[in-house]
Length: 189
Image 1 (tube, rainbow, N blue to C red):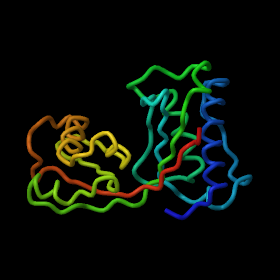
Image 2 (image 1 turned 180 degrees about the horizontal axis):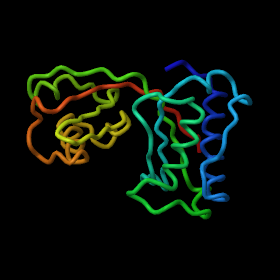
Image 3 (image 1 turned 60 degrees about the vertical axis):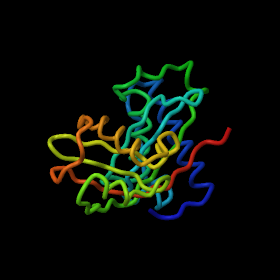
Image 4 (image 1 turned 45 degrees about the vertical axis):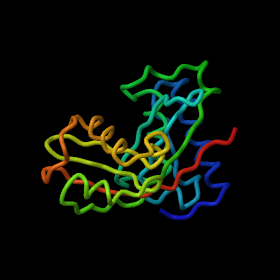
């Protein structure tokens, strides 16, 4: 994760909004010519784009691993959050002005070595750690901003296990856990 200045953050937020506008007008992902953007946007990056409407989640799509240029990643995930998040209907034109966009750029993930669910809980750093759990054919992640609504590590992990389809059973050795940090920025009201 490289440091971005305020202008670069504003430009990426505008790019995400333009992607949604383009999707509304053309029903496809906005094409992007990276030659017209600063080098920092062409470097590989992993991002999540989160949409909110009146303070409520309206869509969130992203990836945990950097596999393409950051600008392209943001364009595709803004489109995905608006039109492909299976939890929500597609965004419609009347909603665009009321959408609030947040971009999270993910750093590399690192495994958490733990002996029990209690040990895993003890190692989590609220408000800082993003967490991915996977195993037994299931996988889910929570970005660090989820800590704002699930402040206790026990609640954070319980909801993540539910999201992953792992139910209420304790985490076992069959499950792997990974932490990551993000640099997040959002539109100003």
